Length: 347
Image 1 (tube, rainbow, N blue to C red):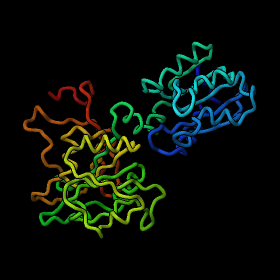
Image 2 (cartoon, rainbow, N blue to C red; image 1 turned 180 degrees about the vertical axis):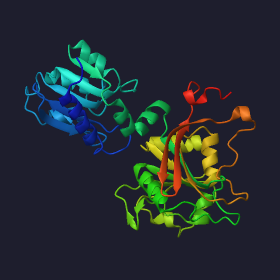
Image 3 (cartoon, helix red, strand yellow; image 1 turned 30 degrees about the vertical axis):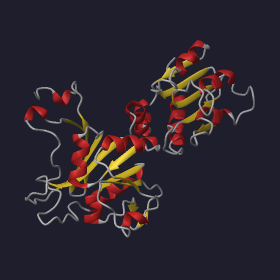
Image 4 (tube, rainbow, N blue to C red; image 1 turned 90 degrees about the vertical axis):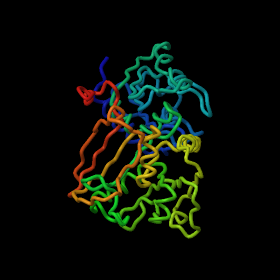
């Protein structure tokens, strides 16, 4: 049975509800319960670790037996394990739900398998509705599940000839106001923002996400990586969140520790040295390159050594989008897969 108009509309609503939930160790999930005639009976979302999952949150708003024969529309496959809460697949079965429509399969080895359990109990299951939108919502959590680390975005701004600063080190501002506003919006979408100690000492960044002079509602946790001490009066100490300091050059250790803290997405904005180190370590899931129509020349390259000694070692990217921002241009890319069509004939 194909997904109908009422279920598609319910998935739109479920995705909206999911976004209300906090980002952290658990995914953001939304759920809508539809009656047999397609009317919304209840809705819910996951409010954070230890609280009822979205499906149970929605079911809790109905009296026992009221959901019998109804349809549950959920942004993620109902879980099939007992953690701080019980398995949602079982809760749906016990409530008498007759049909489940969900967007994404749960990739968890322990938590996955809910769809199979539902089908075995005679529940009709339809998967994949608005999967792309659901994936975009919890991309960081999915990366964390797969790799055991946050989803990492590496950002830099550069001149058209690939420089991050003028010969004297000055770099404010290569790009224009539209590009800078876009950066702050993307900072606010991340759980944490990382710079190196060199950037802290040279630029004294606040590492906040702002709209003009006002702080945006969500602020990324500031992360400072490197062995040099951060001055006691540095702006990062005035951040709404307590900064995290990592006196190490092992970025895999940093990523693992941030993951253990529940950080799903990391925004790396630390200058050429740190950006290059993350790329060289294979820890860049997404690249944001803001390109300004200016020429600087000189030695201050946007990237330094990323481990490419010869052309056959080139790190190929797949461009996801080109975004005009005033007179600037943003390139959004990710590491190319071997079978990516953009790589045809590249050897």
